[in-house]
Amino acid sequence: SELMQSCYSEAITQEDVSPAGMPRIEDVTMEHGKDLTFTAVFEVLPEITLVGFGDISVEKPVASVEDTDLNNMIEKLREQRTTYDPVERAAADGDQVNVDFTGRVDGEVFAGGEGTGVDIVIGSGRMLPDFESGLIGGNAGDEKNIDVSFPGDYQNKELAGKQAIFSIIFNTVSESVYPELDEEFMSQFGVEDGDEDKFREEIRGNMQRELDSNIKNKIKTQVMDGLLESNEITVPQALIDGEVNRMRSEMAQQFGGQNTIDESALPAALFEPQAKRRVSLGLIMNAIVDQNGLEADDDRVRAYLEEMAASYDDPEQMVSYYYRNEDQLNNIRNVVLEDQVIDLILESAQSTEIPQSYEEAIAPPPPPDMSDDDDTGDTAGDTESTDDIATPGSEEEQGAAQEKPDAAT
Image (tube, rainbow, N blue to C red; front, side):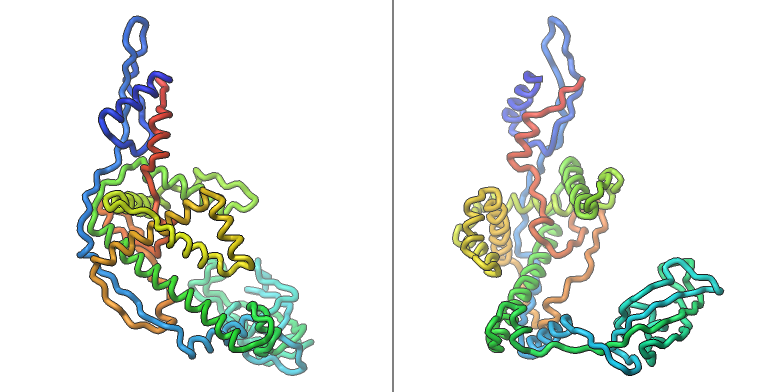
């Protein structure tokens, strides 16, 4: 095993090849009096000849936070903190009612058709339209029946298209109360002295950061799409499989919670299109970095950390934490280096400024088409983040491939 590892390492160095994954060991001859011979089969990282960036087209949203946008945001924040006070009158649209209900289809109570002490805001769309509209006019202590029609495409197929009767008992009726724009309300956003100008400045700053981030991500997505369209590469299946396994593990951890999810139960086909995109972008981005001799700019790293830490109570402590933790700092360097690659591409790309409103600029992009086909460039992507760009073929992965060949005969 040790001899095979050392020979394999020497061979790939001598042949100047870059493995894209672990080798498959074949044709092993290991007999007394004979030389040890074996064949190592592996995929190699593709040689990438970058195409000029001049054919990449980017539409840059241009927007700002206007006073009307700020006022609308403040109203949304007030609406999110709406409270409800009991009233002695009939329920109206926008009121919150607390009810007990029992639903029956053909005289039989159906599964999920009962509730006790349920708060419902009339007009919120939480319940079926017939149900919510039937609550209007009810007073605390009232009992009434509501006829409800389940739509034909209702998610519960057993109820789709059926007629139901709900018996309702009204416990309370409450009207909405918007919070005042006072010191107590503003303190929830870090403005303790009730200064409305400071409060508005704080909210505007948050909105501007959100706007800048969304515009940056939309531009970045277009750049990434352009790179894939103009640089067709053969992606080693070993790297795709590795990325699929990583994504599968992440999903199992994310949705498993306290329970253990069997990763193998998640089909690889679910992840392959996105995995192929991530690996492709990782290879192309690495090639751009190498061929242009790029390194993470220390000043930009510092600026990125300071901006990220600005929302913490002690920003400098957070910045110091990253500088003391080399692994965490390297993650930030990679993010900054990625931004530098985007800036480099934008210097040559065709760009057009598109005036937009604040709401248009912060709206998410259309759902991505993650269909997978032989042409990597046909795989449209979603809003990119560092997590959406795999960096396969790193020195660590190549080293692992050199040091740990499968020596099974």
